[in-house]
Amino acid sequence: MSVVELAGVSAGRRASSATGRAAAGLDYACRLSGDVLVLKGSTRAALPRIPGYRESTIGITSTPAITFPQPGSGRGTGFLSLVSARELGRRRRLDLGPVRLTLDPAMLEDKLVDPAELAMRLSGLDATSRHRCLDLLTCGLCMCEGAARVPLAKALFDLRETLRERLDTSHVDQRTPKALHLDALFSVDNRSFYVRGWMRDAEAEISSLVAVSPEGRTVDLTGRLVRYARPDVTALYGPSHGHNRLGFVGYFELPVPSILCEGWVFMMFDGAGGSVEAPAPPVADEPHHVRTALMADLIHDRSSERLLWQHTFPAVSRVQERLAAGVEIAEVCDYGAPPVNPEVSVIVPLYKRIDFCEYHMAQFLHDPDLASTELIYVLDSPEMAAELTALARQLWALYGIAFRTVVLNRNSGFSAANNMGASVATGRRLLLMNSDVMPKRPGWLGEMARFYARTKGIGALGPKLLYAEGSIQHAGMYFRRSEEAGTWLNAHHYQGLSGSFPPANVRRPVHGVTGACLMIDRKLYSSIGGLRGVYVQGDFEDSDLCLRLTEMGRTHWYLPEVELYHLEGQSYSTDLRRMTFRYNSWLHTLLWDARIQKLGNPKEAQV
Image (cartoon, rainbow, N blue to C red; front, top):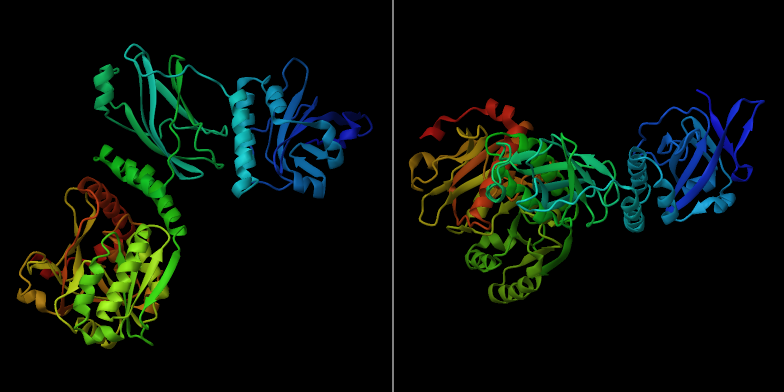
């Protein structure tokens, strides 16, 4: 392949008959923001069309670039490229595939134009070239990080408004045959999004839906979305070509970040050449709010796993990563002198119901084992930190039981709260204990610790848990297949039977134990990374932990001599809990189907 060279801005366009190199030149340059430069050049050489560019490439020797035909006849080929001004100043050489530029940065000042001028000059290109230029320019967001992205994103938005194709704006009106409406747009992270809306076309079949980020990046959502019935829209318009699944939800990704929360546009096209566009509402990005919306939308696809697999799972996985990454310990306070070299550290996550602490203290006061136990309360509701501090001072003064409070900087969920508590624990064993679990009698913790210490190869140990009226809530766990959903569910042996039911009073190995009250070696817990934060608001973290321990060759035990009450409070709505449970059971099955099938069903589970 021949190489077209440009050596120095001051040399302008030049050709060398001796070397056979074609004439080429730098037309202008633009500093979009900070370190990001745009270079526009042209040549009469027949350059091959560069159809795309390497999105992640930032280096000077391999730079994002496109070629396009120049407006007007006989004007040759134009090329547009992004470059780091810092790298350009250091190396002064730029290779764009067939185009090689050797530039004197000091002379670039003569060729610089501002972003408004850049937009005006590029506006003369055809629609396809303008679209490709916008996509290229958004790659600049990969060339800077943090706060430096904001001014660049704003500059790109202004360029987009000048260069993008504009369609008729959609109006929600019974008289208009085409309509597109965006109910919500959620930011999973700065490169992935989730959209909810509806669209209809009474004149032709809808052929495509395209999203345009505020910075100008486009993504085609055609065929990716999950469609569902929208009775409210059908009631307004009536049936649309017999197709009443007018609603849509969907997860999509961008190859480059999108920083601005306002300015998204969606464009709908039909097979007859018709089109409309509609603005999206401001992007919602608070992770808990996003996760709740994702869970609620599972109601739209009850009969298949497409929504779960292609949309909910990748989106929720990223939200969970965001939540985990942002969790930190904001404050640790000791009330009384902590025990030296404790055998057990009891970790109790607190979410909203901090009053359970006093119920614990009233029970622990009469148990000598608790005097040498490290007691750690992890507040997962940081907005209640001041209230917990006031209560903790009263409890220490009243009961004299030493304990520690750990306040998290944000609500993190069951897994992270336990893991954060474990990170400050010093006991040889950990006891993960829900705040609504209360001991039936003293001596329970010491009995669990002694059994754990003398049982070889033990993984997790669980006691008998009772409902308030005395029936069994937990006597070890096993797995059963849901006939309706086909997923594996966590089942409890003898649940609902009397606490004195003889088979429930036999020590035995079990497939798993509940995280409501679970003892495990601290180093073992740490070695497998603790509870995994892939599940949403509980349900399967404990069985996931037990299955990972099983793969390591560990055995889990049920200890019926130890009895505690579990109140099993519900902290969020029934409908949301149902959808969350569906997601968690699906994910748990995806991860553990083969292992659970190998375990088989214990005979006593059928009693």
